[in-house]
Image (cartoon, rainbow, N blue to C red; front, top):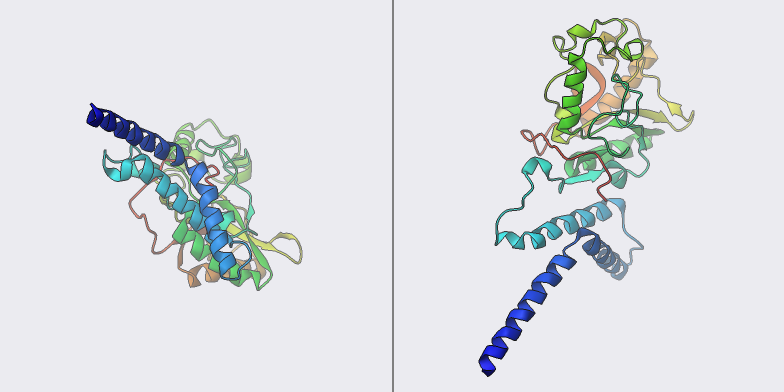
Length: 291
């Protein structure tokens, strides 16, 4: 009788432990604890507070460990999330580059479609950690020259690309033609590869950006607007831009190339991390705050 009672008590205790683990496994509960530990470790080392890069890493660790706990460390099956829905290796750009300026065009209505794009739930910008770290190196270099980075777009979920495809197929919808493609018939957007069914942005290591001059407090003049459909957007286009505008494009381009990004030959604002960590994965999670 006594052994049966002990067995029951042990089973109840085990059940309580499991329930406690599930309760504690919430990322929102783990995160403050992890941040507190990191700050305490820094204090022992004589460091006040925690850097943006370390904070992003700690938050990522909390997110990963939360999922490990909730999946029983894999003992009772894999996590339900498909790989393309997993944002564990992503960070918000402003966590790594606090002085980056965000103007997320696809969250707004000022874009070539004229409406907010599917999948953009908040006006934030996400990148894989590797891409964000490399972009931080670009930012550090350009800050020394008097420039901040201004971000138009970064990670783009597949549903956003699908939205572009639906819009491009709807030929009569030319709401924003005067602003972004006045010299093109909308019917050629697929043929001329302005719109495609897959985008490098969806792999998480591509960013669209420009420079912000801290002295003038204005965007640097690149001789053309973001998302302009035309040859004028080619980085090496010189026919209708000034030498100064071309030089400005090269300041951005050369800094990006020095820190591991590769350009797109049809868009001066578009760069992809050459050694991107997910070259074959097209992610599906929405753009939102993941802190």
